Length: 438
Ligand code: SF4
Ligand code: SF4
Image 1: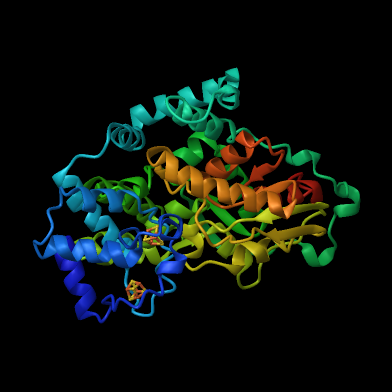
Image 2: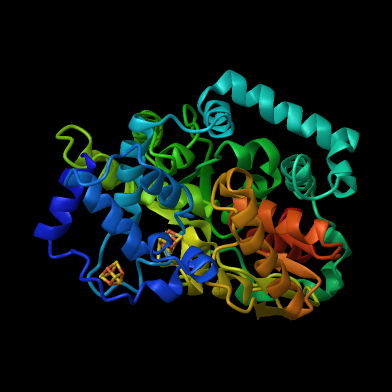
């Protein structure tokens, strides 16, 4: 569906923007820049002007203000008209791309995730640089041009190094071993984990932790072959045909596996898959099929933090700041499950990050392509995390882990960054759930 059709459909569905401005205070770019054109309402106005032929898609205003949007979707839950801003943004960016190709860095990063051979090479190269310690050099580089982008990229890579979870204080396996009521639950069905590209390539340990905690809670984890990148980065950049191609491959792979749930542990990938039906809107062959697929997608925290919840593990005696990823909180409306999942860890004290609902500035590749504004937004997030005083930060999206992790590292803050499921995994390891005796 094109931008003009999507805007018309919003109007017909009574999802039209009524210019109330409720979304403005939720928008990180409007809050920083104070320019109406950098607000959700302003960007919708620009989209309409392009559709009505009053503004050229190649115009500086259209390109600039769309580029500056994080795609965080914080404007959606607060909108009384239910405007589907994220879907409109993707179509608007498609129009913008057709008028002016994206910059070289965006093209390079999209090629990296979409071509399996290039992806393997790129992520393998990243792991090698991390192994050799080259990623540590980021902190030694000066900020600003010409080194700022390389400095951030190296710090992001360094932040994917496994954190020292085993050093967290807590009871040993003997004291932590749970009682009868914590026996392994009965069979909960077969699930397949979306491995992702960056997640599997640089943070494969999060996927393994996800598989272990699901198995420990009665799910049978099937390795789903034929899956690939979720296409979220392409969709956010307006490269919709590439995003659809990647979505088709994943839909077919998970359909063939017959699993009950498709599990995501990366909020950005999860949101893209939940919204797969929107991506194919108007496509007679794929819309319904993609919608059925999207209905099966669950964040790992939903399977472990909703309904019967999950088994209690051994204590981890530590304070952890929790920052909700935008694509979990705003795009999927998943707020309580990660916190409920963490309640299964005795002695863990979870502290909310002040202003946690605001984007960290990572937003896919935004931190690298919009270095200045992304850096300002990221610096505020880092300050908010430090304000909690917690020695650990948990957040459920690789982009957020890397953006905030890099910011903390460059600010000299000794804060470990992990995925929430890794804390549960460490707690289960200490409880003996993986040694075959519990
Ligand atoms: S809150 Fe919704 S209706 Fe109001 S200005 Fe923003 S997008 Fe338009
Ligand atoms: S997606 Fe985020 S940055 Fe973009 S308009 Fe909405 S709130 Fe603002």
